[in-house]
Image (cartoon, rainbow, N blue to C red; front, side, top):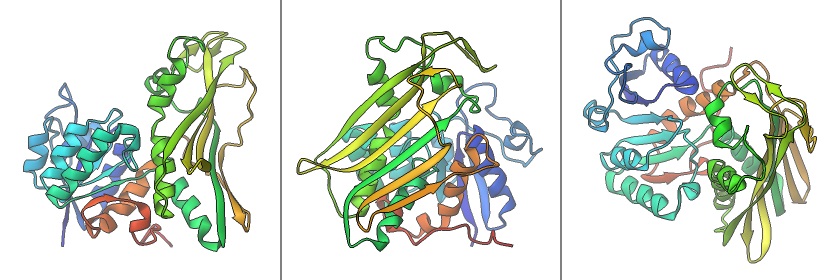
Amino acid sequence: MTIRVAQWAFGNVGKITIEEMVKDPEIELVACYTRPGDKTGKDVGELIGLGPIGLATVSSLAEVVAAKPDLVLYMPLIWDVDAMVGLLEAGVNVISTANFLTGWSYGREAQDRLKAAALKGGASLFGTGINPGFAQMLAVLGTHVSRRVDFIKVQESVEASYYNSPETWRALGFGGPRDAPGALDRVRDRAGVFADCVEMIALSLGVVLDDILFEGELGVATEDLDFGYMTIAKGMACGMNIRFVGIKDGKRLVQVGTMTRLGNAMEPDWQPHQGYRIDITGMPNTQITFHSSGDTTGALQTAMPAIHAIRPVLAAKPGLVLASDLPLMGAPHRLG
């Protein structure tokens, strides 16, 4: 049976998922959404360098729904809760890499709307990627050998100047004054998906948190920095060390954080290990570290979890779906 899939936005990540889907004989790409503009109505294959594939882009929710997709890969830089609700209410399953695992960071009202829309439409909503996504799945899996779990910490640590996305960095306040009013609030809001990560780990282990706290600080450049795609003046923010902490009955149970810096001239001089470290404190104490090479932007590692989740999500229950609700997922048919 052919799986009908629509793609919503096709930046670095969406380009990869489109390439993967057109190679899969069991998947039919039936719609591709782009924001209204000069890309509307163009062949999506030509837009991403594949050559013509016979599918013109559309720029409205109604056109996507009219294509009758079974599922949408939802991958915009800035998410639109109204669009997500519209898809779910129409009975379209959604896999999102748009800063989503549970919806905590979208706010309670938006989270409740999404859950209600999924149940109304009989559709499933699943968030994934590398981080958020795979890193938290690995943390949950790491507790499988535990008799007791006291605390879980997931820490990303990277020098990320390879990531050519000035919009992302400016949204985090990089390039601006560290002490600008609301600077850390903007970081908290833009990186709020890490609160989803905390909630996802807790829910997967049967805990409903009382609260999720934010802690962090910004680092500043000790010299002028030029990355080609953007410049950061000496004394301006060029890094962050932040964490979201899940609280239950006054105890810190889950912490998810990132130390991200641009360049090698920053104060404080937080040192990256270019990867992820998971510490599970309990009985026994468990540590997991991982890093990848060959994917310089992280786009591939964000895209492939979404591709591998298509079939499991289609078989999942309606509503919000966590990785712990799905079968153990690897990379089926990719070995050899």
